[in-house]
Image (cartoon, rainbow, N blue to C red; front, side, top):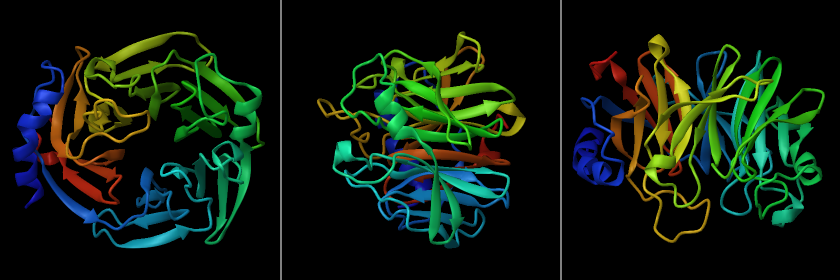
Length: 324
């Protein structure tokens, strides 16, 4: 079945799952450009214009040509996931140097590696530059938690260092290249996930607490150093990423419908995810429905690139979307 046909078939399912106020726009065209990634999760557009995707199950970072889908390996030997989620979960660049965010590999989950940010020094070597796990243990959050080292999710370069979301500890951390870690902002039980920025303003996707109801799927913004959080948009379930596209259009990635009665960190039901666009009135419009457990989003020109838990990368051509 072609991706376009799949999107049409699941539209009714997705509409029933999302809040009624989320309309569906004219459907763009999508094509799978890569598959077979092991534990795919986070992504970034590198300085060379290529996509870089973490493979947490394999302890790797893949480089993917956004036009052809050709795949090579940037780095291997990072701590792999040991509990089905985690390991290398996101990647970011400062200048030409790649950094990997590694989570759920510490002794509190039966591992023996450092939870934190690793600098990629070569194809087979890396160096820990920020020990986030130790900081988390020594500085626990105000909200309830089960894993002392947390579950870090997104890595965003910011002012010569990084911002890191922790969906388990409900906060955004700052990490400098000299290893200093600090709490930038703390939330209630709202499960912050994806990060984006425009200038000094940081945008945070929130999945909301279990069971990740559509009204709890939100984007908020804040400026580090100021205690004000601004609502941007809400109404799509289990948001996992947020990114800016052309003309400063803000997109988000909804993983979809959370399985009833499932424990935290369970993926959404298959084929219920969607790419959504934030509207000026604080609502979302569905740009492309029927995504299968998406985890990460990148925008290059008029194209969106979606990474899925099933190890695929999909390219969605937004030029077919009449609003762009």
